[in-house]
Length: 244
Figure 1 (cartoon, rainbow, N blue to C red):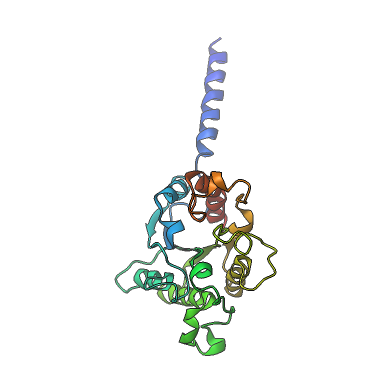
Figure 2: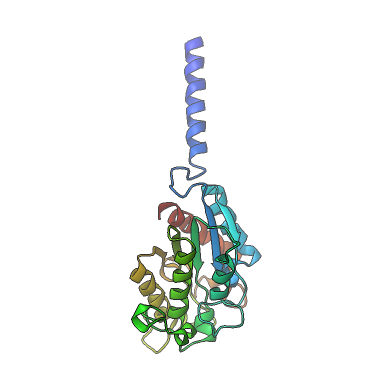
């Protein structure tokens, strides 16, 4: 009987350990690392804490957020943009972070609609032409270069834009054939990442948001995410960070 009780106790304890182990991702090489997040309102709205807190819990991350509402990669978006966020994070007095996460917004699409650019913008290919900083691609390349100048060993990860329901066809249709659709902006984001070998998560395609269920995931402004919207992203985001 004593042996039976011992076996039952041991089995329960083992099951408990297994359950506990599933609650985090300590197997990841990114477990316990420092991460800096850059982006627009999608990265800083209070609802986004649901996703970011989940990453922190699962990966035991030390998170610093530089995001600001209205920011995009192009320096045409507004006075504050993601280029400025990177400048702040890469200042001499700032620490080196293990991971730099670039979270693309919809602001390049909505505020600088014709300025997608090409993956060669602001690179050696054009002599680091500063006029190209007005394009989304030029801004992305600026950020990548600045990060590596600060920390050559940095790990850079990229979250693409999600759909933009303020422009239902050009902002949500992955097969849009017109000029300057949201799909074109996301394709350019991915092309920039591929140019430098930077891992990306395609949230434009992989997020389960569409015009039939947007009332659940998207706020009444037809742009920003509800708490359920961030819950729909947080698992894939955490898994992406853990495995790259």
